[in-house]
Image 1 (tube, rainbow, N blue to C red):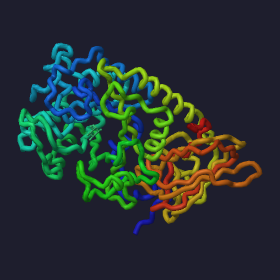
Image 2 (tube, rainbow, N blue to C red):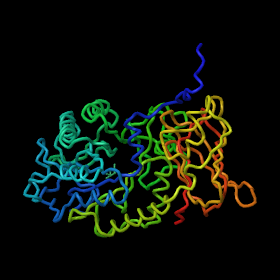
Image 3 (cartoon, rainbow, N blue to C red):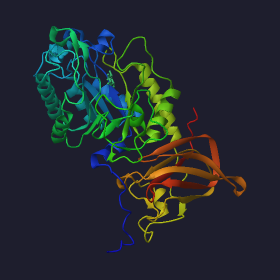
Image 4 (spheres, rainbow, N blue to C red):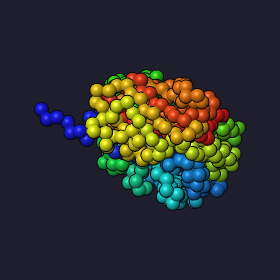
Length: 471
Ligand code: FUL
């Protein structure tokens, strides 16, 4: 048996993220755009019998969408290229039910193309939502429809450049127009769409894109549309018994400590009540949006915040104003990291310590990390702030390329008089954990106590922010 080199990293623990999942984790916050015939008919789910003539935005400007998203700090946008009503926002060769028969731009418009160009100009990544359920198509429920759906996927995945996400929703079958049949069609969601085959196809056409659904394969639904991941939420899960449109929502939210695949959660929620624009709905308050941010991004998920364009084809002014407030509040919160470049000591260090030094958690470089010795499951890291400094919010990240390891932790502050006081405690960290303290704390030393871990802990980052976001 060869002994481990003193500078070798700890062995990976459990499932680990793919390169495309790591890129997605780094995005943290991106936007959803629900826009189609429903925007003009005041519906959430179109029947499929809507005439393309209703799709007539007066001032559609995808550059405004991209600018608003960029200014809000989003890293990408996902468009409903086709929702359950079947209307296609791109001129599909395979159906007449598309923008090519709409009055908008005399049938020569292509919303997906315009958005892909706007995203490129603003440095945003593009994702698409292509509803498997199609209430317009005459063949829905038969194998012929699957053929059609595959051809549509192929069009959208080959015409608009690199995508970061292909989003599969789980709404499946029911009543609809279905080419005039106007009936209820049920499908077996475990077998009808042949998802493993579709996923393989997507992988071939867009190798860098992550695929979202209840069942992944890359990113899982968090199990609710209210904007929060649970307090304990693992980025790993056991895939057995989870299907698109059929899963235990509590399990989807929490993930599983003994998960066998890396499949982190996305939180999808709308800035308004509905996914589509309705004249009588207003955007959520700043406090609600902040709570959503900290309960999603702050619990290791990515936040997919829906911004429904209105009948003009613009994100409404009041939503834009609210997003501006959100950005300002977040920028204030994460203004200054008082732990940056401060000296750190640890109760244990991996190997000879050099590559995994405690100071790696405050060096501002997310690639470097501290790791405890192999046998260690509980450890302490003390950050010496030099002189008393104030913080109200903290951010911790595990080094997830080695898997998710930490089960519970606490944070103590050494306040006036040299007494230690616990200021925060929580469970999972994974890609990140952000905690707001009930009140700002002034301390000259801060201690991260890892109280339970599945394998020796490996921490990339500890940041202590002075701004506070007490909402
Ligand atoms: C669900 C759909 O039924 C809703 O209309 C919306 O698109 C949401 C994001 O996904 O499955």
